[in-house]
Amino acid sequence: MRSPSNRRSHRGSRRALSKPGASGRRGARESGAAGPRTAAYSGAGAPAGGPAGPGHPGGEYGQTAAMAAVPADGGGSDGASGGRARRFALPRGLRSRGVVIGAVAAVLLLVAGGTAFAMDQRITLSVDGERSTVHTYGATVQDVLDSAGVALGEHDAVAPSLGTELGQGDSVLVRSGRELTLTVDGESQTHWVTALTVGEAMNQIGMSPESMKLSVEPDKAVPQAGLEVEATAARRVVILRDRVRIETATTAGTVEEVLEDNGVTLGEHDVVEPKAGAEPTDGMVIDVTQLLSEPETEEVPVEAEVEERENPDLPEGEEKVVQEPEDGVKEVTTATIMKEGVETEHVLKEKVVEKPTKGITEIGTKEPEPEIDSSAEASSLNWSALAECESGGDPTAVNSAGGYYGLYQFSMATWQSAGGSGNPAEASASEQTMRAQKLYDMVGGNWQGQWPECGVHLFD
Image 1: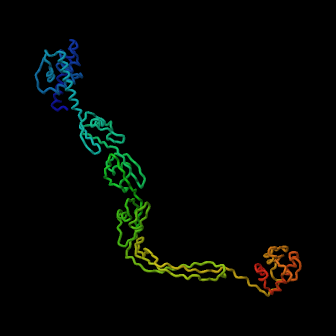
Image 2 (image 1 turned 180 degrees about the vertical axis):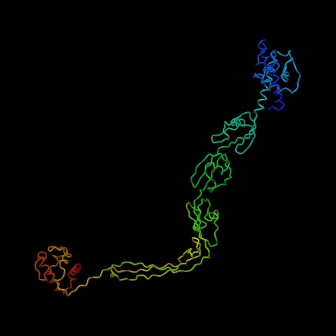
């Protein structure tokens, strides 16, 4: 970089050389002397042609070389005008081709040295948290990495991007890629991250470390060799306390810890369901009952139940106690609580200490037999109903297995006792009915002995 005094000298030199340079170039062309390009590399004292003017590229290089290599004061030469330009004039006896080439090479080295010095940059490079200063002649992030010997891997990250141009004092950040295997509630996934700690890595993959219970602390370093972390996802729970409802996500290990994390302080006699030591589960409702008084327990009778069973052999409407009921005993714990903003007596728990004995009572369902007037005339009874039940109303019906015949299923002996002859099934229906009525009178109305199953229909 040029100092202020050099810049002033440089501007003065350009003003001094502007006009003479123009006439010098015209004279050089006319006399066949060295052209402007030679004059530029040899300085202001070019042979036979005068100094190169500021408008010519060679003139700019000549001025730069003079400012970099020549002291501020010096003698004149050859009558050429222009301050510093005279300090580069060579003695006439040394103006051979070799000497000129050597002088040009010296000027080029000075020019190159001045350019390199101007482009040297100090860049702060941070690789995985380790900072260093890199001196580079390059202008991009890639140049800085090349100068520092840093090669990026497939999963590495760099900021700014590789093609970004840098200036003095800029910084470059490099992070190495590393594997993080995260197992959440038994399900594992592997992620490539460039974070240095577990907490940063969780945020990098879109998961909040605060919403999970981790097997390691969030500030634990993630080594380049990789790391395996187990996590328990937060559970959504609801806390109910009278009129207060709190919905929260928690990684706490117990119900009690959930309450503490949410600012719920339990009183001496407060009741929590589920129990304070239970593990929270997703969707759990934690019910907190605030007690305003000390719980009291008393014994209360437990009324025994009575089971009623039907008994088809017992006349309808009749009851029979098979087993007497015995009441039990339970302990009931109560306390005053705040419910909907009102003090209320509340049953906290019940415990049966003596089980009741269930009673059993049988209820009769048997229909009563119809009352039969045995003094009724045989002709007034319902003989067709009896015939329908005994034989289906078929006068010719024969029950060969039992030896019964006709409408009323006479046995041969009974038929004959009633004055019948031959086979009853071959007699007319009217004769069979007449013989049946005669039989009824003969037994004095004792129909049960003659028709035990169907005789009841005589009274339908």
